[in-house]
View 1 (cartoon, one colour):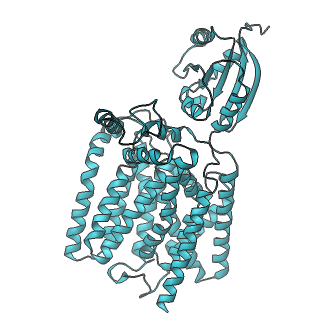
View 2: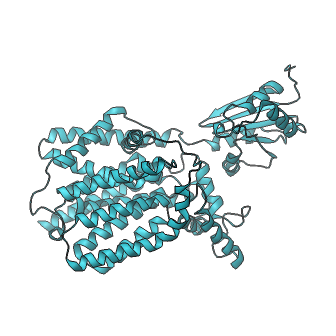
View 3: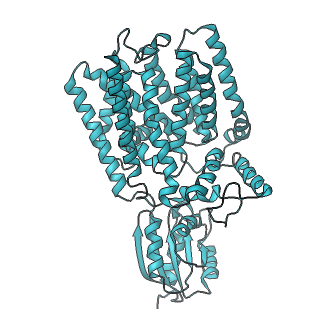
Length: 517
């Protein structure tokens, strides 16, 4: 009977993982690349910014490779950079598969699929088998996790590494085998070098270790050694990053009150990037999580395999742990942000498994009281999750440089230059643009630059040209007063324009004069 039950569970998990693969692979290249994804190509391809992406990791001379590694290390002490391990991995990946949209994102897709069985494995220890199956389903169809499984950045990877580290820790506590302790140290350490804020999982791991007690003296010793070894790889990061945390600087992130942080994160976890479902789906998740926290789920002797050496899955200790996992990193980010704002929802993506584990725990708890209530909650959650996945797959959400570059390519009949506002988006435009052109940087006006200075700058830049194309995206970061457009509207004639998701394209004829005639 037990064998048949396990066979059915593994069959279900295989089917769920296959669904996760299909959802993440389908429409993998629907969204245009955005600037952070193109940055991956650029940064992974150093030290030759102009070289082809297809160069092998080992094709560089010792000096060139030294320069690439040195740049990765230097970014750890610069604002806005982290994750050197991810770029090292992408350097090899791009050599093997190229830099096409599908190939570029497929690595994230692999880590996104891997998160499904890992969430189940961790859930077996923390909440129990049926709850873990529900959690695997929620992870598989989560529009938020699918979004970052289709994004060529490190967020799907850091989620998988977090789950690997936690799973190894739980197995080490249950089985007392050294190989699981070694796995915990390895995967938790790797996550630190994929994204700097994954260090916030260290106190969460420590909470799991403490709540798993009482432990034999030997386990305490092994645990202390493991956490000590985990600290060593982080020391270089700490020494480099601590001055940045202690000194206030402009991170480019706004300050969020803590209630706004919770609201934004929970809405994204429940509704995805397209924010489908309004309050209905959020209420379903919150109701399920509250049920998971406060309803008794499992009785004595109903725990998962090896549970005699750990608290009962779904018991009070593990429910407290899930709450710590979900809330503590948010609180720590808020405290840091009081001095230096660092909050960005995707930076805390490693909290999503706790969100779905609590939901799975609550759905099963509700089912023991009322199948109708549990069915309604689960139906609402699954329905709106799939709607969110569909919306993300069919509607442009990222800045659509693919369409913008195609528009300019097909309509640009002369050698007119292209001006970018803001200039940094040129790299994304270049990824898609077919042809050569003179690139002009739109003037930066957010530092109190006067209209007269803009007048002089624009006149000097455009004096040699009879016409110009303007590509504007996120221009408020560079020209919040829109002085560049104002100058063009006054001194040039707008011949055509087009708007795409987060990208606007304008074609001007110059030499019209202030009167417009």
